Amino acid sequence: MAEFPIADLPEQFRKQIERASEMEVKNLDYAIDIYTNILKQKPGCLELRKRLREAQIKNSSGNTRISNFLGRVTAAPFRVTGKAKIEKDPINAMDEAEKSLASNPQNAIAGNLLAEAAIAAGFYGTAVFARETICKFDPENILNLRALGQAHLANEDTESAIRTGTLILKKQPGDAEAQELLKKASVAIALNKGKWEESDDYREKLKDQDEAQSIEQSNRSVTDVRGLKILIQQTYARIEAVPDDINNYREISDLYHRSNDVETAIAWIQKARELPNGKTDVALEQREHTLILEYFDNAVEQRQATLRPDPENTQFQAELQQAIDQRHTYCREQLASLIECYPNDYGYRYQYGEILFEERLYDEAIAQFQLAQRNPAVRLDTLVYLGRSYKEKGFHDLAIQQFAAAKSEIPVMDERKKESIYELAQCYEAKGQTEEAIEEYKEVYSADISFRDVAAKIDAYYSRNTAG
Image 1: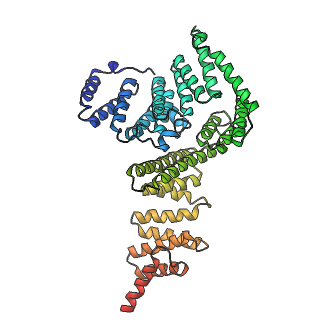
Image 2: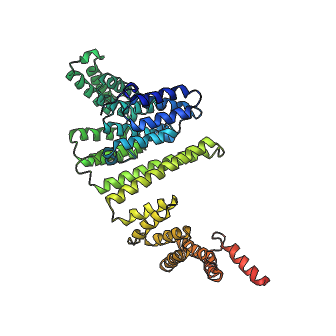
Image 3: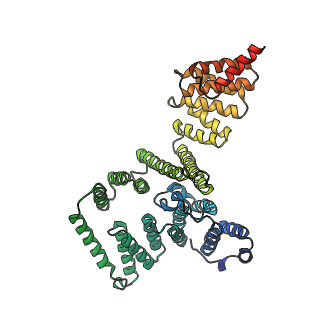
């Protein structure tokens, strides 16, 4: 698809944009709404997208601190939206990215999604713009710079690709992907009858980088970190030599993970899954899911650590909540996708039901829990959640059946059984069956006097009886 300027939009849209532009000083929110609505209908208008982003950044200028979660570590190392979904409907994926960017134009996860979806849609200039926007807020992110270089190549801007590759090599000498980027750019220039020598002799630059890397390896003592780096380089060389060997992708992902670079570990697993034999590899799929969850968990922990010394800081509170929401959104979308792929995996249905329950979508949650009961590994937990779902809907008689079943099937008085009995008692209370309720509370009290407020309930009951 071809991108186009505002001048190529229909006259009606141009007039709306002109009016919105005039209103930016007085009512920036109004202008942003106008730009957003038109862009949704005309996603190929790159000039309008740039104008929208500029207005969004201006609107959020009061929040200038870049979140570690969204600003530094996330700039394009991996996808949180599946490749198949992006390729199936890239325009919708771009729209989803814009929704996230509307509240935080520095959101690198959304910027990454926009860039990947734009590539899939053939909007290469938009992909470049998305990557460049991430660079503004995180100029040291090598992973995003690599992706930016590739976007420049896709956009047939070889000079910009060369500049990006050179910048990467200045920041990280010997970077293999930057060297490969420069090689690809050289081929593109040659095909276009350009002169490689006119671009500061990049072939010689690449040769010098290779030699410098070799000297560095032979003369420096190898530390643990350095040893991992060498292993990564060796594995990368094997991937280049035999690009279809999936085991090398697994290994390099593991090496990056051991180096505490979870983002890049995810990226290599995703590359492995793009191989013919990786597309149906369930173990790879599970590994990707595990790593991404670890990434989001780390992000939440980072935000919690930042908030701990200053718990009243509203900005830190918002960043923590945003990290939690991002994890939740990923889990929801991932589980929905897994259920679509594996409809008979009832473990996934249980996990999806948990998320729906948290969102108070009780009917949808019940549907998942009813199916999930077929999996013995999660049956007991499912009974508890079914009871809670019915309870939240006010269907106390149905909830009593589920809690009673859980009570009878859980063999030991663990936390789960105490929860089931306590909530069973609450349902009896809600139905006005006080004696049945107190018998259940007594059972919990006998096992654990400190559980919730069961001691207070029992004391109150006996106090009433004594007074009577």
